[in-house]
Image (cartoon, rainbow, N blue to C red; front, side):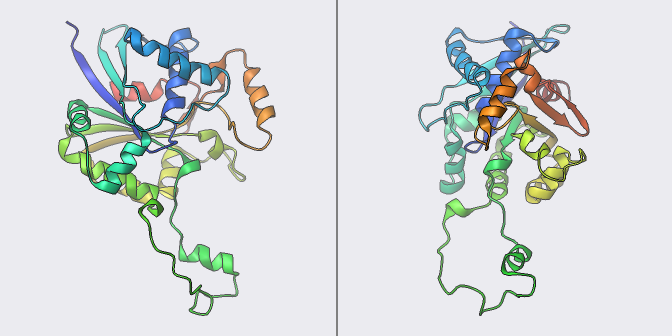
Length: 292
């Protein structure tokens, strides 16, 4: 019986990009458009769902949002050709809302905990287009005008009650990690995937100097600080990934989709950045989990 050397689980809040990533990854694995030193084994019952995700990728359609209770557990067994080492990548039967509920209700299912205990790697997804950021005092002052200070006179008297849905995304993610840390095999590898990386690369003023780790420090400093301060528990690497290659909902999306579909190989529209290095090899995050 082949020994499983690595077991990695996918995590992410709603709309974090997990399904898009898997659809693009499965396309690459099926077509060998990107040369890789890996083969993949799957259960026959998983193939139909994987093919649906792949078809969404090929048609430039965002995968349907997964509903709580309707998620299929998928396992990809990645085999390194030279060594025969097998690594299982688990897409658990948990929706993004499940992780939100973990934060809201302070509960985890036994099945979820058991899966975490078996893992030595996590692939954690965040989507820049769906993060709740903090409102800084400096931002409020700017919105009011440079010549106005934030005083009692300029502040509204209307009280807005706080609700848990208002919590910053980075706070929720850090809390999720804090809840699972007692159950993990330490140190566990975390491959942090910043989805929709094409949105970051097309921002005005981007001169190519933006890297995933810089983005993390600027936009989610609490998460970066937590990972840096807990290196005995978490070994992490940051990747910027655009599995779709462009936005399907942006203004002028028809033109964007048309350009994407013109690619000779659909894998050519994938964007993967680690540090200053950029390619279209969507297996790069998996390679880091497997080989470090």
